Length: 142
Length: 390
Image 1 (spheres, rainbow over the protein chains, first blue to last red):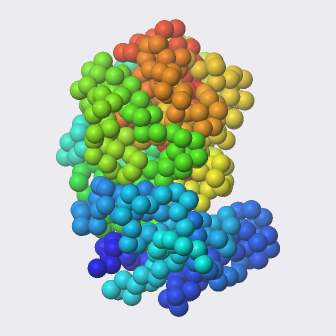
Image 2 (image 1 turned 90 degrees about the vertical axis):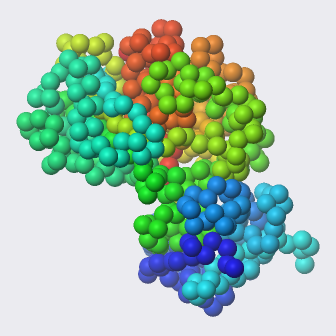
Image 3 (image 1 turned 135 degrees about the vertical axis):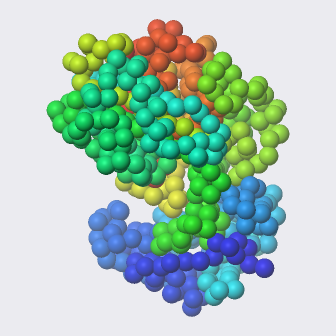
C-alpha cells in the first residue's frame, strides 16, 4: 500500500506545474533562476536572491543527503493512524545547491534515519496516479 | 513609537480545555474579555473606537462594534498570517493607530475554540483543507502539523550544536513549575524530567510535553496614548518597541523548510530582535522577564538565541544552567506557565503576563521587573515581538 495515501492529492498551478509534469515523466526537475543560477523550491514567480522572474528546469540526478528529519509517531488526523510511525525528511540534492525537498525515505526503520544519510530518488505512484518523488537509502556510493 | 503608547487594561474569559467553549457565542466571549479589560483600565465601552487583531480572525467590527456597544469605529486592522505570529503585531498596529491620532482606544482581541474538527494540531491534515500549490510540497509527504514542522528545525539544531531532549525537558518542567502556582493555569500537576522523557513521542524529538496545549478562550488588551494612560486607573505599561516581519529568506520557511541554514536553526526572530533593541535603546541584559511564545519547548531555546540571551547554539546550555527558572534564574521565562501549561490563546496571555509583571501583580513576580520582552509565535513570515516597560 502507498504510504500516506490519504494525503496524496495535489493541485498544481501554472508556477508549480512544470515540477509535477516532470514527475509524471519520472524526471526530477527543480526551478533554477535563469539569471543568477539560484534554485528556488517550492517554485516561485520571482527569485528571492536577485529578483529575476526568469527560470528554467534542469534535470537532476536524484541523489542527495538528509539535512533534517522527524519520525512522526502521533497521527495528526485519524486516517493516518495506520501510517505511523513514518519518517519525513528534508533533503539537499547534490546538483541543486540551496534548494531542499521535503519527502520520505522508503523501506527504512525509524531508528535508521539520520542527518547526513545519503539517499537516491525512488518514484512512488499513488493509486490515483499522482507520482511523488520519494527516496531510498544509499548504502554504497557508486 | 518608543514609549508613546501604553497597554492600559487586560482581560480574559475563563479558560477551557480543547472544545470546551465551542458552544459559547464568540462575540459574547469577546464581550466578557472586553468588560474585564475595561474594568481593569477604568474605561467604558464608549471610550473604545478601534479594533486590532490577527490570525485570520473572522469576527470583524461589523459584528463586534454593535454587539459590544462601541458607538463608532475609527480604526480596524488585522495582521497577516495564521497561528500566533501576529500577537505583538496587533499591539503594534494599535499603538501606531493611537500615536497617529487615528483612534483613541484600540482593543486588541482574539477568541479561539478548538473542537475536534478544527484543531490547530491537525493543520494541513484535516479533510476540510484542500490541496493547494504550496502545500503540495509537504502535505503528500505527511508533513502537516506544527509539531512536525518545528521538530525538523530543532533536529538540525541538535545535529549542529549538540542540543538534547534534556534541554527540552528543562523548558517543559520549569514552565510547569510556574503554572503550578497560577490558579488560572489548566496544567497544574507536577511534571518531572523523568515524566517528560517517558511521555509518548509526537514528532521526534518532540514528546507530548514539548507541545503546547490546544485550548479555548479569549482575551482583550486595551491600548491608548501615553498621555491618556497617565490619567487612568492602572500604572501605564509602555510599548518601548515593536517589530513585525522577519528576514524575507525565512518567508514560508516553516512549511517549505527552505531557509538558509543559519536561519533554519533559529526561530526566525533575529531580524526583529535587532530592530527591537535598536528602537528601545537597550541590550538583552536589560530585559528582566521574557514571555516567549512556547508552542514547542524547542522554540523557546531558539528564541533565547535569536534575542541574544546567549550565542547561537548555546541555548541548550543556557536553559540547563537554570537561567530561565523563576525566581532564581537570571532571565525568568514564561512566569505564568506559558502556552505549555497555562493556556494557549494564540499568545495574548504572554502580553497579559508581561503587563502583570510590570505592574508588580504577577503570581510569580520577578522582583522590581522593569522591562519585559514579549514574542509572538515563530511561524511563516510575518511574526512579531515587542518590548514593554513600566
